[in-house]
Image (cartoon, rainbow, N blue to C red; front, side, top):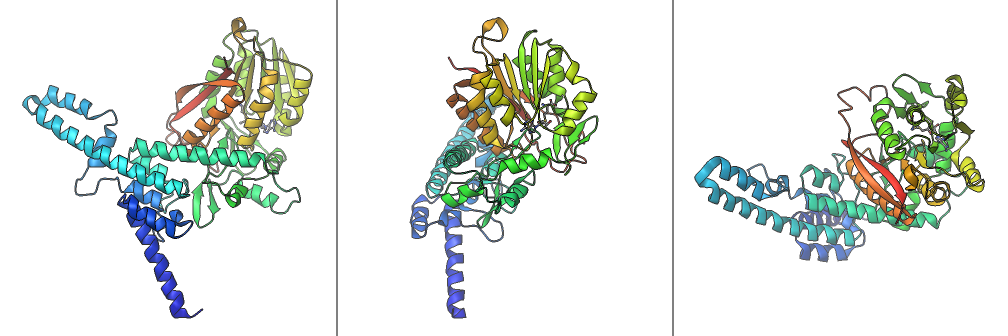
Length: 465
Ligand SMILES: C[S@@+](CC[C@H](N)C(=O)[O-])C[C@H]1O[C@@H](n2cnc3c(N)ncnc32)[C@H](O)[C@@H]1O
């Protein structure tokens, strides 16, 4: 190509990119609509330096500028409203109350207007295929910026966009083979995804990937779906799990690590395990199934409740070895199933074995496995008239879905709620505060920090109705 023409084209593209970013930042919906209709895919242009997409620009524009225009966050920070501030002033500053309240009310209405305009811009961009989880140069998705700035309305829009994208990818997944089985690319894909950073290459942009953590595995990139993009998501998770099951493990007092120093299980999760056991088995003498033994934490809690039957499914030879050494095979009511739950559980269903409480926490598996477990098997294994006083059996799982990024955690909490409901179960959440894991040095020597949120959303599921 003629170099001059080449340069012209580059200039045109740069100008187009900057015009789109500017229209998004100005919340100029009319100009933006015209620009987006010029070229497919232009809702995903990125500033070459900052990596900002139009979604980043539209949301970041709500940040107050340095000269004290604090409209956006003043309102956002007072999510509970100017009224609360007004009360403070009435009590504290006597005569100024009316003025201050009017000022606050003015700010609040300015903020509402800003949110409305930003919201329209964000929706327009999403309608034009803007990807919800593109990362800018700071490693933030647009939703991360909204959260950092306290812009709840915009954050919720981004969460909903992520839920839609992931649900659609999940559905597409059901209609496509998981890996082509010819080996080509499968192993590499698995290696790429497996417990590495949560950012994968996705077209031009880096994208945030949520993870389904049990201490564990990968899940789902999350992007507005297209056939090509959905393919990225179809990793052969069997390969990941198989690789983990063949790897060496290191046990110490406070952690179980795989051969790559990934945290399979860590002792900071103990209170989560004991609270789960408490909610699942409110009384002694129940029939329990636990999938994934790990550091024995939840099984020890279950044993304290003197179960009448306590089945454990565990697939890793080193964990099984340790269980033997520690006398688990001889404990009261214990039945150890050596093998992958995928092989063991269908057999239990066939034999009509029923439980009052089921817990699921594996490693190096993705959300599809968890979903398969509760959609296909829980219904057949959980006694609808079991549990305490025959009120029905309970199902729980380690909720580490997308836990290495708050927005992914919020998205997966919604997705799992929808899927659980579709499986005929109801879900109740209990929030458990997580301490400062950095301050307590939890991640030292662990390859990847798999937990970010300061609250764990603990799920307890029962039959609907
Ligand atoms: C995160 S740990 C479980 C921790 C456990 N909840 C505790 O309280 O210590 C996950 C366990 O699941 C096991 N596992 C992984 N994949 C499995 C599979 N497909 N079937 C059965 N067990 C599996 C791992 O070997 C590991 O012991």
